Length: 174
Image 1 (cartoon, one colour):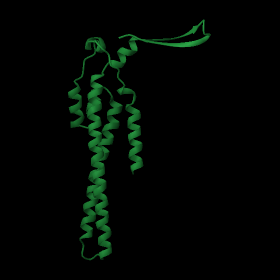
Image 2: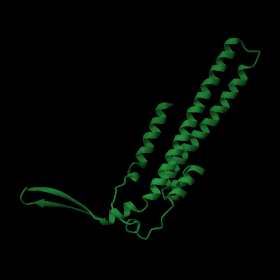
Image 3: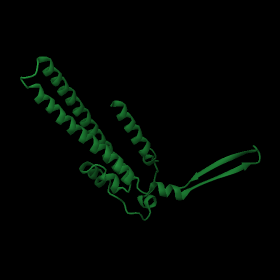
C-alpha cells in the first residue's frame, strides 16, 4: 500500500513539475507580466482548494491537475471512511461472547489495523489539501507568466565561423 502512495506522489509531482517553475524579475510591473489577461485571486484560488478538492486548480484553468488532485483527495477520504467502517465492524465482532478468546483477539487486532489505516489516509488527505492550497495560490500568482516568457523568448542555432561548431543562443527579454 505504501508503494502505491509513493507512485501516486511521483505521478503528482510529474504532472505539476513544469507548471511551478518561476523566475524572479526585478523592477517589473504586474501589467507587463500579465498583459491583458484577467488576474485570478491567489487567495480565492487557495480557499477554493480548501473548500472543494481541485476547485482551486480548476479556477486557475488547469482542469487535468484539478481532476488528479481532487481524485486523490476524494480517494483518501473515502478510504479513511471505509477503514473506519471496517474497524468498527471488527470491534463489534470482537465483543461477541460466542467467539473464543483467540477469535476475539484476532478481531481486536484487525480493529487496531484498520484504525491505523484510517489515520494514514487522513494524514494523506491533510497533506494533499495543504499541497492543493499551496499549488493553487502559486499558480494564481504565475497566471500568464509562461505566455509572456514564450512571447519574448528568442532562440536560434548559429554556426560560429571561428570555432566551427554550432551554437545554441537563447535570449529572454522582460
